Length: 234
Image (tube, rainbow, N blue to C red):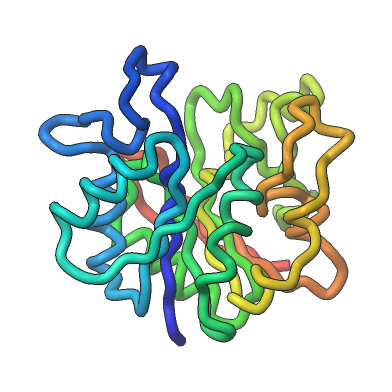
């Protein structure tokens, strides 16, 4: 299975009170983007694509000056959400194989956890990584049926009071068939039901649970005690 990795690195650092692009904000001794880059390289993918945006030239300059190897850069000119960002990278992906989506501002995910996610996706069109956390506010909740099969991902703004008590959330990390990413139309569908009115990311229930779409979930503990809990498939 040929593996590509897309790292979403288009964000600004406004909430961090800096004019730096978010990927270049330091955590300990390294810019945030360096952590997923290190993890990505450990997985030995065929290619790494970085989706840049705010101060893209600074991000590109840092990556090339501090990392050996070849990288592909593409620009998300309008920040219209995660799904839109992934779609910018789709053009640069091979026609076959799988693509893992990582984030420049999620630095502590490990190669071990991602390898388990990759393994879960071998016969699935799309697999996502979930986590159980003590404070899930703001995250999309994983909805499961009475048999504990995942049936939906409910965004915070759309969740009922009961659903907001669920502590299993979608991390945003996913792996999907390249053909699926290139051809699925849902990336372009603006949600009229979500309060943000943004282009839905691949976590949208109408994408993950579309008819004839095979999916799997890999669950992990919160970062700090990251370990695999379970896989479930639909």
